Image (cartoon, rainbow, N blue to C red):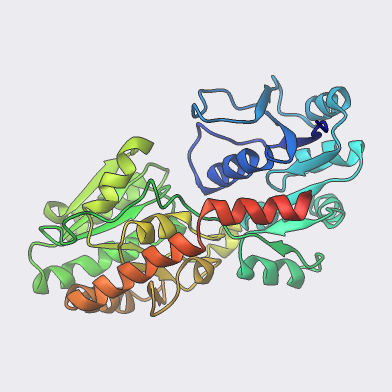
Length: 352
């Protein structure tokens, strides 16, 4: 039997930390084991899922030198950077050739730092450069990076499934994300008072934790809508499917925070909601157009416009058939295309 070649996958952030990037890296590492002996190198400790198929090496210091020392020991046939970061790029450049996955916030934030020239020089050397959405590909080319390969994320249609009873009582809006300004939760909250006039039983559930929590709670109090808004906090993975199933509409009108270099690279939660049979509302920003089929699986809105967000929510709440149609379309899209099997196959084909 032919011995598998070795692939080293470097990342500064990983599970059990939560987020779309961490999930993407995990899923790609899993699937690359079909053709590579995959070794993930990271400073992040913690328990991984039982089904983990790749090897993990934990380094004590998150420095280029620490990563490079492991690369010297392993002597991998291929190096893949799980995200674009100057420390990872330096370590990989000392080793030789490397491929890099980018998400949006990683390369955009670097454009605001002193290390921008070195970062850009090293990222341009990636063979290949990979990104997760058409919007990211366009932005990278505008910044004079090589044309990247696009491998969109997916989700697990076996894990996320529609509820047996498709109508939640009372009608419930849902957002699940890290609580940061660009997610647009404040825009939904500002739309709630007028929505409650038409739908007095409407509830808005917000899952996740993050630095924007206090500001959002203060906004809820100021708007006088605490009776209609619930902050769920961190939701364990095993509870996520049920939270989606209890919702009527998933809404996350993301926006770009230009000065922070903060953008939604894709939005895996939109796919999780679609797999759960929910219509989705997203902002016209970043990679959401790759995660939502506008008018088919959901609606893209001007995320800075409270009235536009309110109108989209109101329209879906008043149209049961449209909600059902968009939910069914989203479910079919995940089953046939927007799943981790497809994404993994594309990554394997690109890197083998």
